[in-house]
Length: 92
Image 1 (cartoon, rainbow, N blue to C red):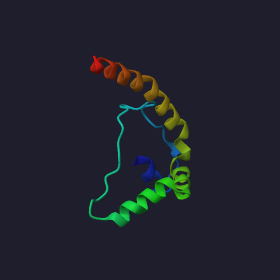
Image 2: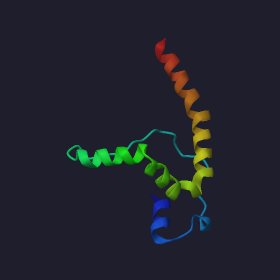
Image 3: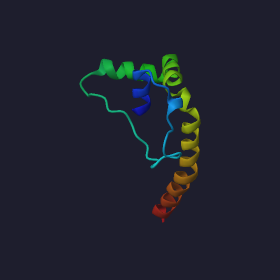
Image 4: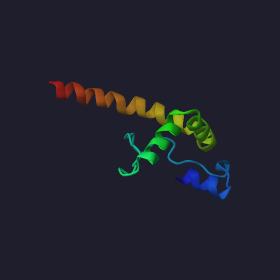
């Protein structure tokens, strides 16, 4: 949300530093949508999977690609092995 605020207010991310350099947590998350508005849900789904979704991602997040890549790499290294260990332990 902070990145969005910078964009809305016309400020540059170059004037700020994202902290921390790696995520505080690697938990998956989702998007809450109202259950009584299928038209809105359909629009959101079309934007996510369509060409416009890629354009929006580029517009909003291209300036933090380096941070997002570092976060993804960190989570793959730190979280995935732990999940595999737990899954193996749970299987017995």
